[in-house]
Image (tube, rainbow, N blue to C red; front, top):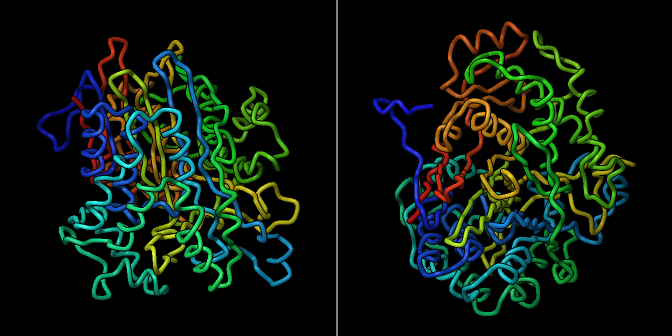
Length: 526
């Protein structure tokens, strides 16, 4: 598709040597500086992630988790699970005996071990070229010296003020004169800057052992949660075997469960079997996409969990027989009201991707889950603690029921696409539950409708909200909305779904980057 230059928008970014695409300009700058200094894509990704810890604190932080897929130019693939586990004492019986029906998002019981820094350590150890300390330089400078708040960050922060008021550490570190910062306001995080400086000097062990771990455990324990220093000391990240499917001649790779990437692969399998639709903005296309997503998400909720407790094999979920059974639930002319929708808690994430001069591609995602995670912030060290434990359920016998030392079903999913065995697209779409549907939407835009990376991200989106209605972004046409309503969908305005980054690598080695307009960031290369 050719861009219409008389309309607002931006072109994809082209470069030959290296490229980074992130959700914040300062993070893209951090990555590009590291690349120019000779750092690897892994170094640049971690430098960007450290910067995002400071400049997008509602979305991500060292109190959260990360995942990554790394593609070598030869096509060798490495998948990293940097998600933390429930506390050893987080037993299902404890919650059932006390009348819990769910793990509330702002509860200390929702705080799982932050796995991000163990993930960073693994990624840097295998693919890093620069000194670990160097990767934190921008983040420490911004935290201690201050930075202006970006527009989307300010928009989101303002909506989270009431949540932050509930916790003493959050009030101290994340509100300024009792208020969320506004667009362009310069703020600083001295406590977090001190913490990041210590981790930069001493490595990831400084987070999991010693005074930082003691501060985290004490914060959670004082509020009645089970997380201990021993839980933090046991934290590890793991290299895992990626899972994949084939879509329109490309191999699409995901992290295996406990991540929900398998959901994106289910949707792609249904798109392959279900046939193409005529126009990217048609009611037919959006109806098919949303119904396939609803069917796949129901499978996710029934089966996806820590792989140690999954009762259905990944291969069976992605089989032709399962795909056929899922397709059988689809009616091209009508919404299937029998499909149960998952709950949709607010979720905030950052996704970034980097390709270096050697062709190494890193697809990296990093999150505290809901806005500012649990909303609980350590008083001494200024760390917002994730609430990933709220992804567990309290259903006896369910694969994703909470238990000590268990990883929850996880929403954040980096993506990688290969063509003829070599990396072709490093991409991801942030946005909690939306991510599998968002990835499928973007890949369909690229491979079925011929969009470039920027167009594929710009294109309007549709997803259900917490009432079950379809929240339509403003770019959907009146004809598409009318057609969806005719098919039984309750369509409402006000959608704003996810955000993503893409770097395509063409056969000649040219890099083509796109960055989602729903965020503050951009792609840049040299």
